[in-house]
Image 1 (cartoon, rainbow, N blue to C red):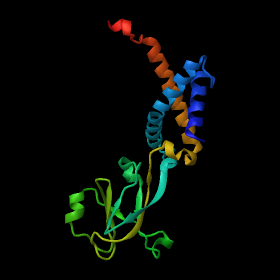
Image 2 (tube, rainbow, N blue to C red; image 1 turned 90 degrees about the horizontal axis):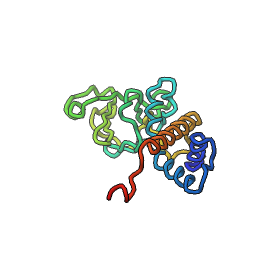
Image 3 (cartoon, helix red, strand yellow; image 1 turned 30 degrees about the vertical axis):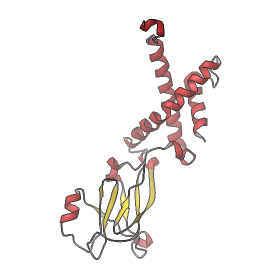
Image 4 (cartoon, rainbow, N blue to C red; image 1 turned 180 degrees about the horizontal axis):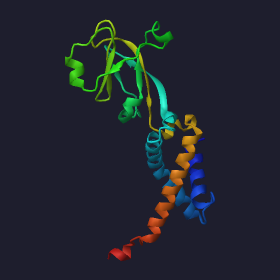
Length: 197
């Protein structure tokens, strides 16, 4: 499904037809839907993450490249749901090839200053970066990559790979936003040039 197909479906759900009456109405509905689509994706992301039975729909596994123990957190990562994620190093001998699970340190100052048991690995998030203390040294170091299993926001750019259930929710929310927008416009008279002067 493309974003335009999603928009067309939402317009159909909102108006009962993909062709609202009149050419201006078609253009208006399309423009409104395109403008409201990002809001629908954000709203559905929040709704899914608040439902423990649906949260898995937004979970992804991503590799993060490290340079000297520091890597960039991928765009769209929902850090507020960090407690649902896991971070593993790339040790092929640990956990049947899945790597060692790293322990999260919440405060960056603690991560920098404490002396950690080097038998374990640790990570900390700070300023869109992820920091790792590798097993064996306890130092912030390590090149290679780590794997982050975490929640990511719904993104219109990745629409082709989104779960069908999430897409259905986006269509319904977008249709609702379209209907609410039409109701607001009909409830309040739009000002014209003559009204102002």
